[in-house]
Length: 181
Image (cartoon, rainbow, N blue to C red; front, side, top):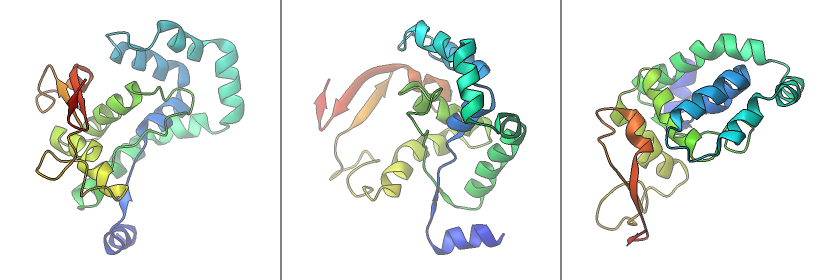
């Protein structure tokens, strides 16, 4: 309770970066889950396969000596996200992209699924990726909302992410600085 009060007092944000911990706990299993999630094949299959190669796993386990511990503690990470969200702590989605297994683009999308799996509503997960992230970096006056005065940066989906958060991967169009691309 003291930690939560300290976060509230300091108006701190929480970014769970579930993707990096999921990768750390089981790189091979995580790469399979990422590949299944990437059902449109945005990332070449070979990239996922490379993460599962025995030499990649050996390097991974050598650099992360606590993989078994991390895998065991994943339920606590999920519970902490839910607890902090329920306590009113601002949540910002983050991934630690650049770490092997945290695949650019796909990791950002699956991070939202992991938020929902941890017990957050789909709306809360979307807010963590939009206004929460914008506010965390001090850009909440310009980014993160569809409103007058905010930059017109948005992603148009082919499906409703409030009905199923997995549809965040169904990108139809992207608007950047008011220009549809």
